[in-house]
Length: 248
Image 1 (cartoon, one colour):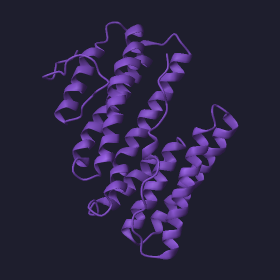
Image 2 (image 1 turned 90 degrees about the vertical axis):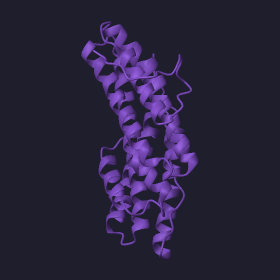
Image 3 (image 1 turned 135 degrees about the vertical axis):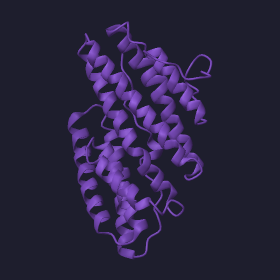
Image 4 (image 1 turned 60 degrees about the vertical axis):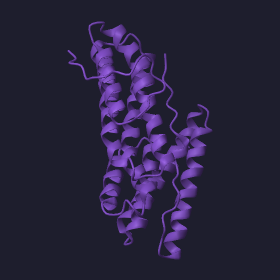
């Protein structure tokens, strides 16, 4: 049993924000082109560990460079764009600095959402996506090292659950503030986390390790929360819950 670790390709690179100087514009263009190139190299590694590590090392270097440029950039829109590149590169490199870059980027976005909706939207949810991917790596490692302890299985379920809640909390900040296609991509990832990674993978894992754990109740509450946020979970089966439940 495995869950795909594939991330959402359309979210890897955003359109360039406006800039005020040729030097910075060229640096932003170069950063975005390198992000696209390194991401493609990682995807094309096809299980070749040496190729994948080379791509991830390049992504880590790019995260450092873009983060440094963001920190020293005086123009707020350019700062946001550099932080978006840094955060995305760190996410794809499995680098914990993704939290540092998203938080700094979100701070720069505070009064700029109307001028940089795509970048600010991405900076809002990249940390959530990184957390989900980290949980998936843990899940796959547990499955490969079967049998799984009850505590480890519940830990995976609860980590996914926490990410799903965070994503649903963040969605309210995104609705009406980001391009429709970006919001749809975010909703698709919520669907994947709740219906597939929790509803199929984590449920199977925890049910086998601890049959007394009521994951179905907690999954129902996540589905109800999603409905309240107008997120259509098309991959889930069964009727949409009409109320929250008191789960043990």
